[in-house]
Length: 524
Image (cartoon, rainbow, N blue to C red):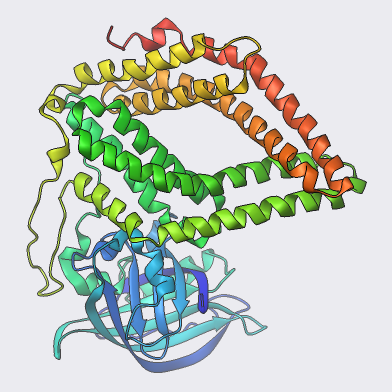
């Protein structure tokens, strides 16, 4: 990254103009106070004209003498005013946002531009609490902040921050904050500086904010809500996919694309054909890229589990096999990153958000602050029939994927090819997704049905994973050393056992999913 990455944990406290930092000597046993230092900071924050980053809790700034910093919400709770953010830093001047950080905010920026939206000058007085080895356990900073609009002062405020060092005990917050409150500081307020500087516009709901779904509302309301949830999932995991630190991010992004494609198919009778088909094609394109990495992750996890049960003498040969798979995954990840960098991907995200954002596409100017935003409706993709009552319209549409699932089950022969069970799994997944969207209006009946179908999907998923693993092992074996080929053979035996067990048991899951009482809500 050319800089660094860490998780920032801090508490912000508002203070009055005459506030003075209290003495912190002895506040925690074993920690010494490093005398206060003062410095002047100047930071310029960048965002889209409609403040998509700020509205989502993301900040991107350039600070003189420090370079660029991107702060991302961690998703952790913010109890007691604690603000937890992932902080990524990159060296560089203020001429342009570094590509390393620009890539990480594509999910919000997409095809829009990033522009300077706020300039802050801060006079910072800081005190550190350090242990006997000199490691900083906490830093307390007293910031006097001036918000500049051009050459003019637009706003001035003061706050105190308590930031914990890496590995510091979170209980240190309570002790230090209590001392500051006793000295007259206000309660914890997790609002970032730039949010205060930008004012009410930065507090507007993020894109695709979810209004409550009226169970007695229209099918259109429910379909919009279901699609929004999947798009939010895709956007939320974009950063994780790019960073590549957690395989779950790829999994969740892939699920999002699959759900979207499935829902666009299920609810096609209520959607504009051209709109839906174009989106399905583009979603398949990126889903294939995500799938290449995800399939390798699943296979790697499965084979690592099998390898752990081998004799010690086979462990070395097993690494040859796993290294081959890791290389394939690395190549798939590189292809995926190239796809995410294409304008085609940003355009796809724009199309999804612009269609589904309840506030419509926004193109607010960066200044003046408080400028109103035009509201543009993007609902032209919904046909008039979608305005019918959800509880009447949706069951009829879910019945179609249910019938196709039943037909796929009936087509399975006792000793038929694995592909037959794979088709049942695909149909089960589509049926489940459709029922889960319908459950927004039909609640428990649809949820119970979706849950039972999900169990069937899970059993068949384990079967398909075993089939794929065996196929990969057989294809890799001829190119391995004799020891590696021997290990591949042992692992094939394990995968065949899994496939056989799931082939014998999936029928029970089907019986539970096909019970008449679970599908009584489906309209004949």
